[in-house]
Image (cartoon, rainbow, N blue to C red):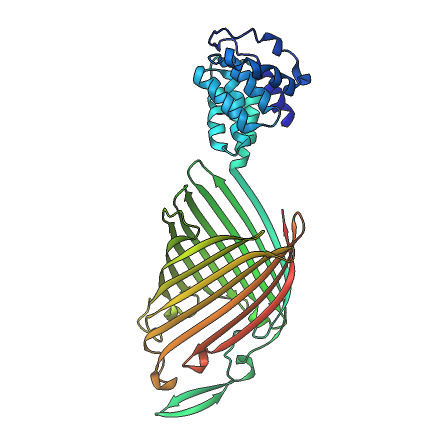
Length: 441
């Protein structure tokens, strides 16, 4: 493709058959043409530079001078010269060819595509140029689409594979009296090694003012305790509309979880994030999320949960190291779909913090979260005499990612979760460590 583009630049030096140029006292420029691939572009630039005062109104001169700079890799200087040529003669075909290439090199993909498409549609386009321009258009359009897949495989150890209560004793309330009940071994925490895998595929499509992202993801965890095996399927779509001062994005997705080989629940998610026009280092954002929670075998647990949040994104440069820090606080409201749900509706709040930085030849990603939820009604007359339940959940994740090859990454994760409640049935501790690799293609 590069060879084809190079030939296009050589061809573009000579004007198209019907492309006119303004006449001036500028000398004859025909000696600069006809050298083909052997053209010494540095020499051409050096010979053209002293002629500028004589050729201020000559579009052919600026088109030729811009082509010389472009073929030396000086895209910004070339773009400036080619703009001057097009101001003098907007129909200058050779300047349009090189100008679109200069824009592409500088990252202005969609403007380059638009100009190249206009060139292809010209009735006076020489037939020998059309195939090259069409091939260039297809090559550039490939940059508007991005598809990649990855496979992660990790081995780890979890001290609570089945998410069991932290206590082996549950206090029941019967006839006003508290009776301790010892949980059988199958309802107590099970620890052990496991294998964790993830298979994901992402597709991104860019447009001049927005982009579309699609994500398909499958995750699984398998251990000797097959009753606690997990399999999760996720699909997500994101629409992003960025701009220089502000941006917003819309997200929609579906997640389905199987636990122990049986369907557990399905989640439908809708969310929006808006970043207002603030130019400070730390940029604020506002978020809204809605989640429909459908439980496969316990319909009385179905609910719709909403969240309104705000936070800050802070890209910081500390010495030679860049840091990405974000913090978010939000209000939660979980409404039961069934009036018979234990505890009925509940509300609360959530605090999230994330920090990413470079260290030890890789990336360190830290995530911290704290959530507090309170039921509106008593959870069950059998637990704490029908007290209203409260939950306080905190978790932390530290992930280390280090590239081993261009498509192979070493991953290590350390995760800890602590859930506290006034009802022993809902207190739990979970700590896991895992290490493995991620392969991308």
